Figure 1 (cartoon, rainbow, N blue to C red):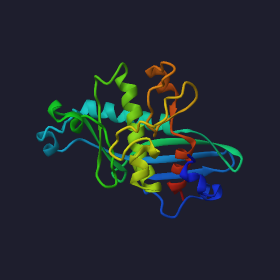
Figure 2 (figure 1 turned 90 degrees about the vertical axis):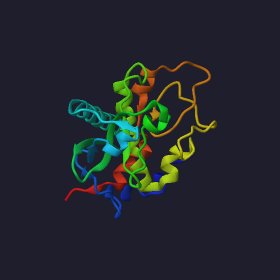
Figure 3 (figure 1 turned 180 degrees about the vertical axis):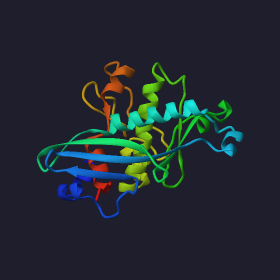
Figure 4 (figure 1 turned 135 degrees about the vertical axis):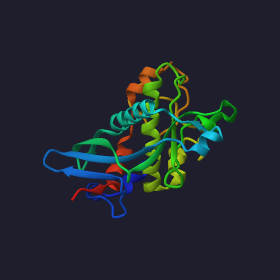
Length: 236
C-alpha cells in the first residue's frame, strides 16, 4: 500500500502546508540539502487523581529528567533520516526541545497491576487527550532502548493524526485496529532492511529476529518523515 503523502507534490512537501503544526518548525537549507526540524515537547508528571486511581505512579524528579532525556534521544534517533525529494537526497535532522507550548506528554511509572494495560501501556491520542508514556524497568532485556523507541512511536501518532486522521494513525496504517490490536494480516518483521517505526508487525515465521536487530533497524519510514516535513511550520 502506498503512503498517503505520495499524493502530495514534492514541491509542496518542501514548501510546507498552510495548516501546519505549531510545535514542529522546519528550517529548509536548500544549499546543503538539510532539513532541520525543531520538535517542541511539553513533558509532565501524572496528576494526583491519576495516581490515586492507580493509573500511574509519579516519577521523582531524577527519574523524570532521565525519562525525558531517553524520550528526546528516541525522537531524534528514530525520526532523523535521509529522504529523497525531487530526485535529490535530503538529510532530515529532528531535534526535540522543551517548551510549554510543545506537544504535551505525561511521563509516568506503571500504576496498579490490577488495571492491566490501562496502567502500563503507553498511548498518545493527542490532540484529543494528553498521552502517557510509561517507563517499565521489566520491559524486556533493554528497557532503556525500548522506552526510547516507544517514545518515538507515541510521538508519531499526533503527527500522523494531524496529517491523515486518527483512523490512519491509531490503526498503524492498516496493521492494527484503532484500539491497537495487531491485525493477523499485518506484515511479518522483515529479515533484513528497515523496520517501520509506526507499523505493527507479526513474528517472522521463517527466522528468529532478536530485539537488538529490531532496535538497530527500526526507523520512521521515508513517507512518515516526508509527512513530518510537510506538516511542520517554517522558520521565518
